[in-house]
Image (tube, rainbow, N blue to C red; front, side, top):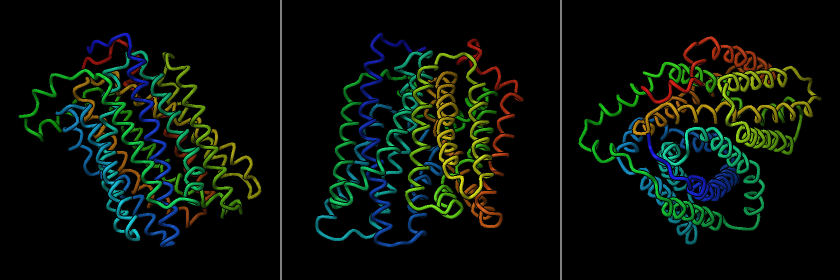
Length: 412
């Protein structure tokens, strides 16, 4: 077990503050890029490709990245990832000063940023349990979820305001500054090093990748949770892409309706993250996860059964959907951090992220086909019913129910 000093709060919140600034600046830039691509091309295909570039590096490179995160100094990986993201943005900003940005240039930078994020995210998740006491991991996960939701709430409005007055390269400069601040925050914090990061360099790469899978597979509860989560994401994630469709086509709204639904979801997520931070020490967290999935399914089913003049209730349902998210994803992250040995966490988080990322495009294709054939409202209803069924899987697996047993922690 890694010995943690009494000033873990100072260390965690120093990194957390830097990440907060970087996350918000990146979210603002992401929205500004969407505005730019929409304005310049008006092509749904271009926006789809941009979204695909956003998660494909994680999906394809995840297992390889996980080995590198566990092999080498995670602190340096986080700093280098942020610097690469900043450098890519800086180059794009300089180019924009002398010529009009081409779509392919933006796509290349988006790809580089995605690769950087694919390194940074598992490294940050793997570093957290080295700093935070085990019984505080769920609380910290709740705060992290709140931070993300705040970024989702404020970034569209700030991006729209700045894009109206500033050139894209000026907004890119803000993100570069945010990435540099995140690097400094990580650099000033002392993070414990794992002995395995020194000893594993000469090990067989494929064996290390396999060891990460074995570490996950040996914990039957976490492995079952991964399978349930993959099925859940397969049904749930495509719904995000359909919010504009149901808001404008089915409910007959305007782009403002889309904004209301998105803000409602993000607000619910922020409240849920705060509540998770307060309730983080609750013992039966797997029950909370089950209730979270059930609430998501129920909210979707209600949304799909509303009449065309029921947008106000739909907005409330969006709030409930967002409220449910931290009690699933935050708790899942904390359980992995508690029960997987620190030297395997990079590989495990990269592997799970890769599996989830592969589930998204398949789900998007299937949901798009069904939504067109049966109507987006009926697809919301059907997805809700399926997700409520998925929620019943958690209590059905004895290994999942045992995940809260303290004596089962990190013995695999």
